[in-house]
Image (cartoon, rainbow, N blue to C red; front, side):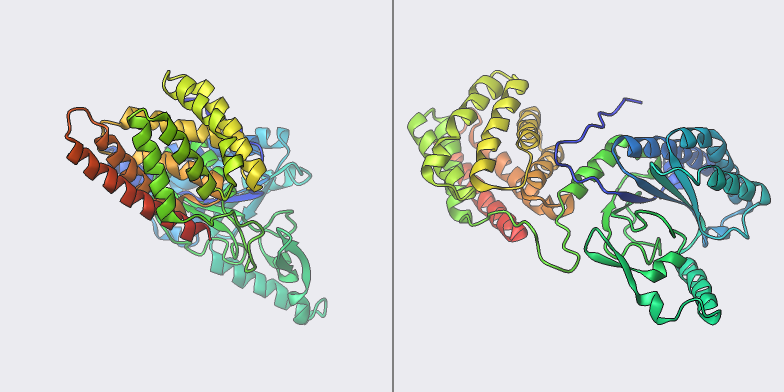
Length: 447
């Protein structure tokens, strides 16, 4: 397996707690003509990889749902196989957990699992109880409603014994992310005593888009990411991408935004200036290139013309010395300088180096796909770029990225050799239409 670069751009907001619903083990196996149990075996290997990657990425708490209260409806042979896998996971990883300072918690019921597995879980919990560097929650025979019912039962027992009152359960004893209240009732949940009991990010694989009652109480303000791949294909690289996507989201917790980027541009003007720059570049009209580029930067980033002009040299070097000569390192360096000037002028909240690298990445992909109709990789690259600049999630940016990819497609058709000026004019016009729609979508989204 290719080793993933797990370094994150400066300023990445890493979630303290990630919870994963690992769906699709059996589907993964069936698609490959393998026994369903082989999917579970492969999924178990992924668990170890993901937990290790989480630590490397700076995540404190990882929660993984291994077996739900409803999974007892499966065949005896599958259940037996799963229980053995869980035993093996403990045997293979307990030593490493102790070495890495991971505290293990079991979420769920203990009365229905096999005595042998229960003893292994109890041993893992006991032997890691003094660890504080990380937390690993393992949901086994876990259900969100079941957890709440058990918590209510324990709380009512304390009320009946006179240790607390019902009103005490509503006492605010802290705040999640400094904004959302922790009520005393949380101390009766399976995540009791943890420093980060509420997930910041929930990931569900295999294209399923439901919560299934996972951590019903704790996920009130969690962000969600729906992965289309089955869990055996989930990787540390996909985990990294999920974190980057999370970092770009603006979490309000029922309040208002702390940071709203400047988006005062006129979509029609922005599209007009950008196509004007494209056409001037194609026809080597340097005067109109400079004029349209400066107006475009000024319009999109609400900068005065003098400040916008100051960015031109960096962009020109990125194109001439980088893009034209396919020196992507030089292009990235110059685009990072370009975005540094943008940031200084606008006070927008992005990492100039990260944005510069992402800008050049989509240039490179565009060159590779210029003759290809399928622009999905181009759209994905655009999602990352605009997500980093405007702090938006991948799902929110899908439409905008598609519109810009379509504009790029028309741009490429307009520049094809051998077409008539009338045909080229038609494609330039279509490019401008798509760009205007793109800028309108971006403005509405970010606003």
